Amino acid sequence: MTRVDFPVVTIRCVRRDKCGKCGKRTRRTLKLWQTRNPLNRNAAGVPKTEREILVELNEELAEKLRQPLLCSACEYEQIWSRPPGEEVK
Image 1 (cartoon, rainbow, N blue to C red):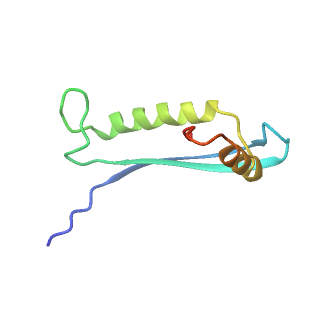
Image 2: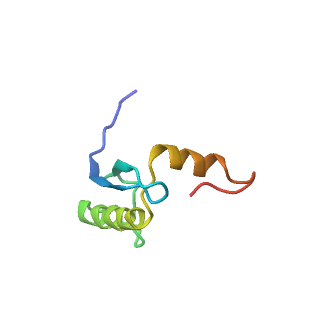
């Protein structure tokens, strides 16, 4: 069986700030990626170019950066303290 490796388009962002809940200094690294392959298509049904993928990744990154930064302890508390059935964001 033949293995096909598709090129990966990646963006990485290191965010340093104080925790939005407790004020502790926090650092988070966000890494977003997509592959350029024939199945990764745009709305027109054509395979996405590297530029189209980068635009999508930058939009996703901007959305994630709008959320408050939480330290690992506060993030853990937020995930595990919600009522059953509520989805993780």
